[in-house]
Amino acid sequence: MIVFRLALLVGGLALPLASPAQASYPTPVAGDYVLPNFRFGSGEALPQLNLHYTTVGQPRTDKDGRVTNAVLIMHGTTGAGTSFLSELFAGHLFGPGQPLDAAKYYIILPDAIGHGKSSKPSNGLRMKFPKYTYDDMVAADYRLLTEKLHVAHARLIMGTSMGGMETWVWGYKYPDYMDALLPLASLPVEIAGRNRMLRKMAIDMIEMDPAWQGGNYTTEPKVGLAGAASSLIFMTSSPKQMQRLAPTRELAEAALAKTEANMYSTLDANDFIYQFDASRDYNPAPHLAAIRAPLLAINSADDQVNPPELGIMDTEIKRVAKGRYVLLPITDLTTGHGTHSNPAIWGSYLQELLAQTEKTR
Image (tube, rainbow, N blue to C red):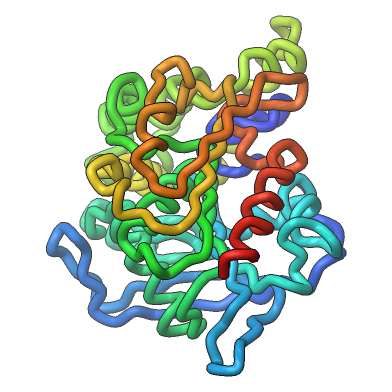
């Protein structure tokens, strides 16, 4: 993920770097599930698609053997499931008495296709890797839950940014699979306008770098990656927080240097291209009426990726039968798009959703 160390997040599509959460919840357990002959929506296929995942807590079953406490949390673009194991996120959610107390819930944190330790272009196929989409990510995660983890029904499905968009897809693809849905920092419409332009610019900057070599580079194309980051800084940062934490030229340039150093050490250019293009056919809008589970969408007013002045959510949420929309006001605590990573701000709304759906289960 692209991180602006001083200001929480530049590439706020993923969770910020943070210290691991204190061990106030059960030890996370990692696993892998191989899906043989996985066919993508593009028609392409992989002989083996590996999905890496992390779980926290234990499954509970009812008298019929059905898991009743599974919570799926999906990460943002360039992130991984373990991104949630931070003091900022897990430290406010998974501990005793917290909204997603891992002594009560079985928390599942998958690495999406193309991310983390799941199958991705940098494993060897490079630009010959199948052109995956959010639909493919959701289909693969559904198989992980049902086939490997034996979760026939989820208590809650939620996600941040890209994971928030996947949450909308879950809602209409599998409308009876979950008790509740919580998409954070997302919109249920096609990626267009400035959002798509900036994603396309980031991809183009990499592909225009001669060092990219059509994806067959031996060292990362740093000029292209730096150019991609420059378009994302505007897209996913909080001007208020960046100004507060880097109020001088020297501090701003020092923070940028840290961002670039982190980027060069963590990103793969081909993975990045796939990750940012995976949203190309995302568009839940025609399917919103098919969502049956109670859904609570939460965005932040300083989110440059999903600016509230577009008025999109105000209109589209009305098409979700049990939908509700919360727009968090700008405060000294909100951090633009990256507010999705801070449950200290929105956790009370999650508690409300869980309480509401507990009564109707």
